[in-house]
Amino acid sequence: MKILLSFFVLFFCASILAQNTNILQETDPASVGISIDRLNKIDAMLQNAVKEDQVPGVVALIARNGKIIYHKAHGTANEKGDQLDKNAIFRIASQTKAITSTAVMILWEEGKFRLDDPISNYIPEFGAARILDTFNESDSTYTTKPAEDQITIRDLITHTSGLGYGVIDGDVRLKKIYAKAGITDLFTTENISIAESVKKLAKLPLHHNPGEKFTYSEGLDVLGYLIEVISGMPFDEFLRKRIFDPLGMKDTWFYLPKEKHNRLVAVQHLKDGKWEKYPVTFYDTDYPKKGAKRFFSGGAGLSSTVKDYATFLQMYLNHGALNGNRILSRTTVQSAMANQIGTIWANGPKHHGLAFAVVNDHGQDLGGEGSSGTFDWGGYFNTQYFADPKEQIIGVLMKQTQGTTTDQTSWRFRQMVFAAVDD
Image (cartoon, rainbow, N blue to C red; front, top):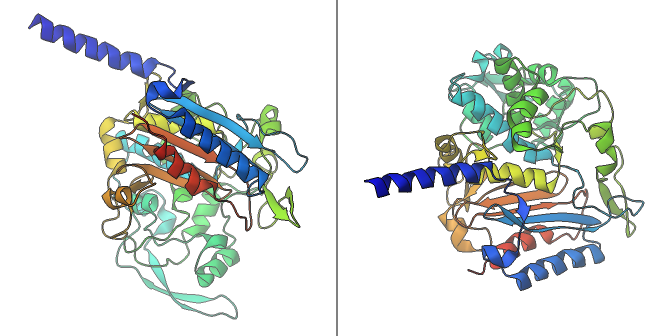
């Protein structure tokens, strides 16, 4: 009995020690079962991508068992040719979504709402959901019909609400309707809050009945405002207090402090064989450091570093805890990784959970994607990540490009990372 008790005490102490360890420190790749030769091939691939003008610059991080085994930068940070640093800050766009979803689940754990509650319970402007019926091309007027169901919080997390995505929407009709209504998409320097934008959005028609299909949407922006309503705090402050500060994510912001401006990588496009700063279009790429700085987009607004984002992913690999701070319960993480969209992605290599796309058995067997349970997503400006709970591997790859390129680094990086396992 004493031996058994001693075992449990030692196990408990080891668990607490692991949570309090500053785990994302560099270590020898071989010590965690990764081939150094194959890491060198990944490094050469990234260097070659810069040399061939697939990308102007790239920062990559690979971690296993909570230890960094690769963290390097190649290429340039801007059109002036400044050398890219491995601690550079990137606009992570849709990688914001997983962080917003995590914030939602923090409040859910506190019993503030149920995931299948109608969003109109908390943001009454949504009222009764309606679907687009007819559309007049000449003046963008339209008619609607009642939806069969109401938009729920779960629908918003999983992109099954029927909401659209404005300027990047695949349906030209909804794109025009959003533009006419003055919906703010993705990121902005304009003087508007998420509350103001979401209340406009709430009045617009849906693509389809909630829960019926997957339509990439501004649902996570709605949830950013929900967090403000439920918590009584500005969304950016909530993230800082409940996620960023506890995890030590000091370089993750909606709008960068002035002292961090020089670390922001420029968004570039290839023009006449030369990398140039991307021009102002429907947004200004300098939004993280200029303008009104009031629009905290839960779907696309954050900027970060590869190490900060790897830290966030490690918290999930640790079943919700890191550095002595529990962000989510282990049971919540389990639910977050489960299939939340039923048969909507039937026969595909992944399902959608409560924060990520998640590789299933079919995706695992196809090869190159990681083990079943690997979760991932990416961002509008060419950033990607994945984390494999079985192999305890994290990969984060960040670039900042727009327009057509020959970039092949995303799939090659992921495929080669898993091929580097050597244990």
